[in-house]
Length: 483
Image (cartoon, rainbow, N blue to C red; front, side):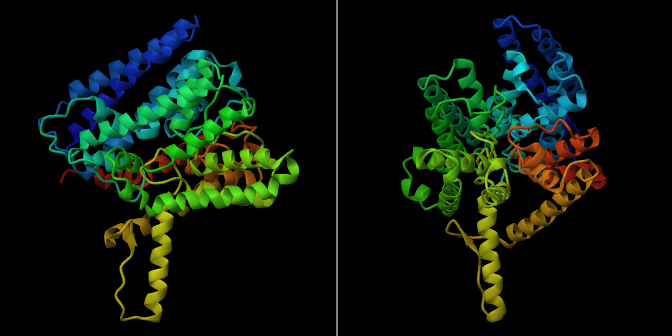
């Protein structure tokens, strides 16, 4: 195993984080806030750690294989979160480091779960960093590094292993032959949509700072905002803009590339896209009808239903109302959407629509095989046969997915909260949603959980974002053996 390349690349990421700290520091200087010192110290610590890692582990062989890709991804996300928590802690705005770590992991994994009962007491610089972590984590910090840093000598396209370890979904491919060019294209699309989202919120009268931070939260499908009531206090126009863009950021970015290259037919033939839109439409219709007696008009009911469906299926976590007060049918629909999640290759979390489709088709083929044992049938997805290795990987992922949720749920049951709260909390964090039901509903926070539970939930957020396998490989002793 190329250990030096693992630590060297991780050091590059930490050094990049040191540069990113300068943005919230600039914001704090503009608003003349004392938290700027915390960002400067954090940047210094990150720079020192990054430079030392790169200096001490400069590799001769820069080739990256699958194992190195998994290790780089896991170590980078853990270390970036640990250092990214320093500004919260050093500024004193989140006094306990475990709480600061929870908030940072929630930011980078685009979960949006918070231990802050009142976010409005935070300084502008800290609020900026808190939401900016969503934007960084949305497309992936390693994809960002590949997009902006020059390729390493001897890379030879091996960085596809890093992209596969970090990008969500059962299968990750390249848009163009060169992986770094793919990363650049993805980020250009990401930036373009982010700018458009920001401008449309500004056009609706939302303040500049609020527009920027809510754009970060929407683009990264994270959910951090600047007000305790989330999006409730903003205009219906702003709520509709955020609804539309949450859904757009929940679509596979490869489809946007196809549209940009005028390959409309291929983009519109996407099975995952139509299943995603179908689920959204059906869920919105059911919830609109169910909550109609609670609101003044069909239009208002439809707006709240569409917003909440978009927020939950894309795992963003924003809210325009306290959906924990909705009928049980609505909460049941939203709970299912938490599990399904957005499309593969998007900034959304969850199990992914593509996995649901492949699982359904695989189950159908297995049932047919029972009736016709001699028949040979192949599962197809997006017009292509699904390889047996992909099906086996999907089966492994689903087994681990439910096992991890069950294990986390049992640990949370050591706390004082009820069944609904604990189950929704672990499912929400694992699927990178944010709010749940009960004591962790959209108007409440995770502050009441114990230190152990917060660490478990932080681990769940990381496992959900990296889709389990990279972390399990990283903690396996056999991974580190020389072969």
